[in-house]
Amino acid sequence: MLEPGEVIKDGEIARRLGVSRTPVREALQMLERDRAVEMRPGRLTRVTPIGPQDVARLYAPLGALMAVAAETATPRASQTDVIRMTRHNESLLEALESNDPIAARAADREFHAVLLSLAANPYLETAIEPLLLHARRLETLYFRDTKPGRESYEEHGQIVLAVSKGDAAGAAELSRHNFTRFWTPPPEIETPSPTEQNPDDRHPTYPAPRRS
Image (tube, one colour):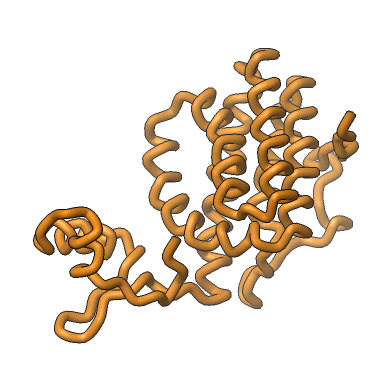
């Protein structure tokens, strides 16, 4: 896994894959268009660095879109879907306990993919996929720390419970929070305080799941 800012050597990648440098460069150019890679001809190619402002800009829209997916998916979710989400969440916990951030990231993706699939909206998937490309680069680093990873596990349990109860609004808000809680909005973004929110917009807090 390449980290933000890490230099990419196209010749080395080509040798590992057993191909010429041309298809590797073409692939890197595609990633450059998605802003995942930074290319400076004659100098270097590297994974695009990500700063604090980029994190906020990435997770604000990603959280909003995942909330739409959760809200749309919840009325369609069956008990089988709830079980699938629970299993992916338990896989997340197992990966955290094994200090395997890559497996943790994969389990987290699979958990949210259940709701995205149930939403059955190709336009939503098209909007989310480029954001997930950038999020993956951050989430391996994120899951290296077990504390935030365990917080995600607990929040996933609340999402599962909301979905199982058919609470679409609650599942949406919990999903949004799961994606946005670890970044601080920049000064120009004002977040209303709880006292300023409409009481009708508030959703119940579900208890965290207990492992049997």
